[in-house]
Length: 280
Image (cartoon, rainbow, N blue to C red; front, top):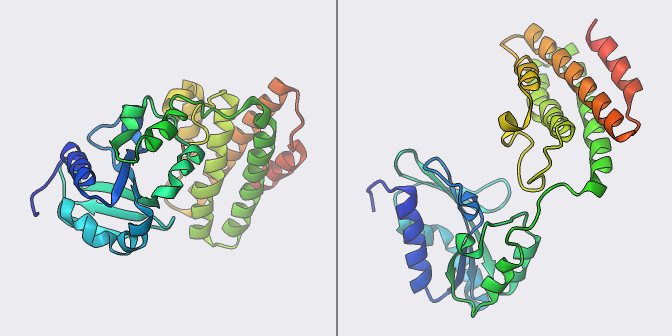
């Protein structure tokens, strides 16, 4: 196959093959389609359950199996260990993430951070004698919100990580390791700042299944979003330091607000010492 495909056509091809390949006993979509919110820019996230006796051979030859669905532009095992692919498609190259499991591991679905809108949205093919359907039904509509009993420990962890990495990044910036400082700023400082802002806004839904920045534009107040924009660094070391100070001040406000709201303590001493040093 050399023609471009669409997301919908790719999904149909996957279903058609699952129905006719006797080795496959189940195909589930655990991505945005399972919440019925996929669009033309969405990737495809599917898990296939393969008969136990056929699993090892199927898993070894997965690239050959995947080639039947379209023009493969990329096929490899990603950093998390699962097969990732990109197919020629319209309107953009289509990312299809595969996960392969032996039939005996259908029960693992219960441990996934998923909450499909209904079983039909997640199950694309059922060939397990009903076991797949029975398992998926147990996770339909379940809450992925951060439990109230875990908010205190999460705040302690996120606040601690935030101030720790602010200091870590500043030390790299002082050594003129600007790219390491920049990577730390975006990957650690901002990650934890966004988590603090979600805690402050009580935006805890789907905490277990999404990144800290997921739908942040809809969760924060206009004032907080404006402050967040001020944390975006331009090129150069000086701008990076200004962004760090802006992020640290924002993190201080969020920590103080959360602690006051719940009557908790927080590491204000390290925060004040840190702000004094990095603002000089």
